[in-house]
Image (cartoon, rainbow, N blue to C red):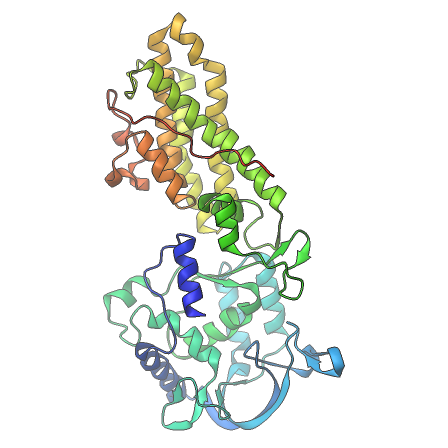
Length: 439
C-alpha cells in the first residue's frame, strides 16, 4: 500500500518533503518517547478492556454506535464488522479531557474545518468521553509499549505520532521542530476526523506539547451519483483519468468542481465541461490568441508599450491583486474560491481583448495595439504564476511562452519590478488546453 501512495504522488505531481512509514526506527523512537511522557504524567494506566472493535477501521465503538448488519452481525457506523474483544490493556484518561478539549476548541475556533465537521466533533465531545484503550496483546506487529513488551501500542496513538516524527521529535530543540511545529494544517479524510480532532490534541496537550493549528476534513466523491465501491465496479482510477483527460486537467477539476470539504459527485460530462469551457475556451484561448497576435504583429517580441490608460491600469491592477485575495482563500482551504478569484481576472482579460480589439488597432493605431498586447501578455504572466500550484506542468509551458526565466516564477515575482521587458524574444506560441471531443 505504501508504494501505491508513493506512485500516486508521482503520477499526480504532488510534491512532498518526506514520506513516513510507521515501521521506521525513527518513528518507533518518537512514539515510545510520547508514550513515556504520557505515562510519567499519569495519563496512562493499566487495566483490562472489553468492548467492540472494528479491525477494518482500527477503532473501538460504543454499543450505542452499532447497528445490526447482514446476518445479524454487529456493524460500526462505517459499515465495518465489529468483534467483541476482552484483554489486558493500557488506557489513556480521555474522559478527563472533555472539558479541556471544549475549552481548546473555543479558544481555537479554526482548529477544525469545515464548520460542519467542527459541529460534529463538538457534539461528540459534549456527549461524554470514555477512557481510551491504547494497547493490545493479541498481536505482535506494531510498536511495543516501553517497559512492557507484552503490549503493542494502539494503532492510532502510534500512527498520529508520525506527524511529529516527521519534524524531528523527540528532539524538540531541532531546527525542524522549531520551524514546523505546531504545523499549520493536517489534511485528512472525514472518516478519520475523530482521531485527529479529539484523540490527537488530547495526547499532545496531555504530554505538554502543542497541538496542530488546524485539522481540515475533506469529503468523499461519488461517481455519477452513486457511492463508489468495488462491489459496484465504479471505482474511479486516477491513472485512467490522467491518461484520458490530462494531468493538469484532472488536478484542476478535482479542486474546482465542488467546495473543498464537501462531498462531490464526479461525472465525465462535468469534467469535459470544465475542460472545454474554462480551460480551453477561457484560459487557453486567451493565451493562444494574444500570443499569436504578438508573434504575428510584434515580430515575436514582447511588445513596446506607451502610456497606460485607465482601462489598462484596471486590468493590470486586477492581475496584481490576485495574490492578496488568493492568500485568504488558500489559508482557509477554499480551493474552489481561489480558482474563481483567478478566473474573474481571466474573464476580465478576455473582455479587454474584445473591447480593445487589437486586430482593428493594427491599422488604426499600431502603437496602441502594442500597448494592449503588452498589457495582455503581462496579465498572462501573472495568471500563469498564481496557477502554478494547481496546474504546474501547463503553467510552466505558459510561462515559457512569455519568456519568464525559471528563476522568476515565485509569487514574489508578481510585482512591477518583474514586468515583462519589451523587446524580449518570445518562442512560437502553441496550444495549451486542446478541446476534448467525446467519442
